[in-house]
Length: 207
Length: 199
Ligand SMILES: [Zn+2]
View (cartoon, chains in turn orange, brown):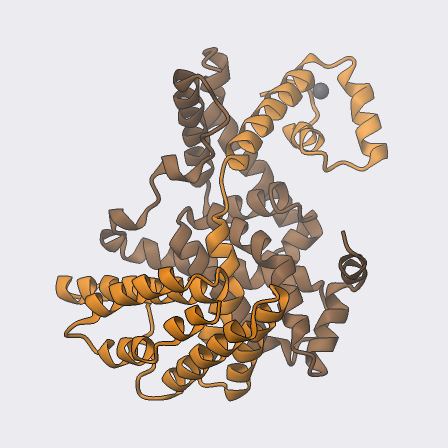
């Protein structure tokens, strides 16, 4: 576009602040007498302001960010790296100290971790949630997959309300929802194991 | 900032890696704490879908955990981490291109949920600005995968061109070429917006 013999790359690098101080100063001297390059710099600067504004609007979901560590350890635990199971344990119990919960909360944490650990290493291991749906998957299989993802999410939410928010009532109601969802699936044993221990009620009496 | 927190900041990533390699597991928690937002936001900009961005972020740290034992500090830890993320994002886009029919609509985030909405009192202006933001993000999404990666890593993740080159396994000169092409393409796509006084 510019008829000036400097390439448009100079204008892009200048607008993007990629030039060294010396290069930028030399280019600024050129800008004083070149309207082509001035126009180019103005155009690319406007462009960058626009894209910056649009991308700054993109929000990070705080809840998802809270769970990253726990989910990484769960993912590692699912590959049966036993050292990692103990890591998940210590990660969750560390949280208990961090928030200075009552002992009962830590005990509740320990029980849930024990169950989770047992479940993860046993044949009850949670079905692995695939990132991509394969093209051979039937509609039924896909619905099943979404159901499993949903169950997984509710279980995760239950863990979160239990461990991070220490909210026994909410935990119970979420576990109840999971129980309703899993009827007739291979998750029944898992959900029963979680709800039948009455961890949450026991914990609730503690405070 | 507490004393402990300021002390933490003094420990550089590579030091945390050697602590982790020496068996101090907490060092990996600290590394995740430092980088989860950055990696998540990079992936969210790349894949434009919360659930997939979250899954891939978990995958990045999962892979990092398993590879870190044998990691040699040839590059910065952060560059290495972005490299894992960039490769997974490429795999994601490839898989998506191969099975476009199965890119289910309900997995996409409604645009309205992707952006902040609360700081305006004028709903017309709010809608106009959201619309503008959407158009601009769509233009960024129209860049080729390499152009988009270079643009996002340099512009939003604040990586130097040299670091972008290491992350994407390209020569620095190639990175610059992709960046220039990205800017030219965006200019072509978006210039009508300000030339027609739409903004
Ligand atoms: Zn010029």
